[in-house]
Amino acid sequence: MAHSLLFIVVYLSTTVLLVPLLARPFGRVPLVISRQHHLGPQNVLTCLLNRNYVRPRLKEIAEQTAIEMNREFPGTEINYLDASFPFIDKFPLFPHLSHNDGKKLDLSFCYLDSKTGLSTNNTPSFCGYGICEEPRPGERDQPCLCGQQGYWEYSLMRRIVPQHLKARLGLNYDKIRYHGCHAVRHDDHIHVQLQ
Image (cartoon, rainbow, N blue to C red):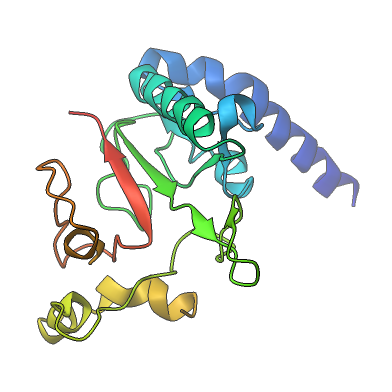
């Protein structure tokens, strides 16, 4: 019991006090753990596992976006999901293929409460991933197409958390693009990436 308690104290102290200092030479800073600037983690485990590190510019963009969202839609907070580890470029952040340099950040969608129909800062998934919109009749069935091509991992989170939005929402911005079958579905969150 004492060893476990000591491990927890040392791990938490290292994560909160030492890792942020060591991450700076790698060009990374942690995203906030608290709900500062209307931005916070969907799940505190993201921070405890050091999956919340980004480049300073990306942190600034995320915080400013959260402030502007709250200004336009009072009470709205942005939940972030995975970012990157604090050290070493190209070190994989499983299960992500690209979250390895501090330039990527996943943000949770904003949802409506299924009972009240009002907007909520809560997500229907404990981890923020896996709640996907299925194709409607007449829309391209990308999950089926990727599955037929042998990309079993494409809908993996959908199977773990029971439950092709660009065309449906009429988004024509060229920076919003398809991620390919080789990655898990991205219609359950927003993937933000610095150039």
